[in-house]
Length: 226
Image (cartoon, rainbow, N blue to C red; front, side, top):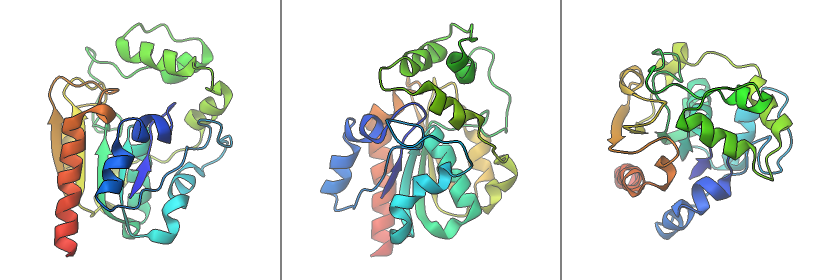
């Protein structure tokens, strides 16, 4: 079971503190994951190697089930689009239509200006941008390394989504700036969608409804394999 955390966070913060590691271990799953390049004291990210670095702790175990939140979800989608055989099932949380280029952001729920927050040029005062500014001001945050993550060359994901044939569960909060995820679900051949009521982006990893949906989806996988 590969777990990939979100931007500006860590494996500890998204997965261990919220109980995912312990619950999955109790189910007999081998949990692997690491802090992404440029995060939590990991090596800086100045290249396109972020996806491969995220997968490296599970490379000898493939195919694996995987859960990713926010940027971690985008990383898993890119990895699966390039090589679906690496995975059995995917749980993608906090990723929706605007983030993958399938829809314009909702003016009432704008995407945060994260790079502007790093550069000190952001003026947005929406709640999501404020949370990102607090994350980036944390004592362990290496703002230069995080800026390199955002500025790394990236290929558009939307044209490649049809290659992802793995069973995929999309989980997104009803109040998430990254949502909705209806078009994304339509573009993924094996996708189902769970919308968490009254849940914003940053509350998703700690949501018991998100965890229950993911565990039911993964348990279904175990039964099918048995």
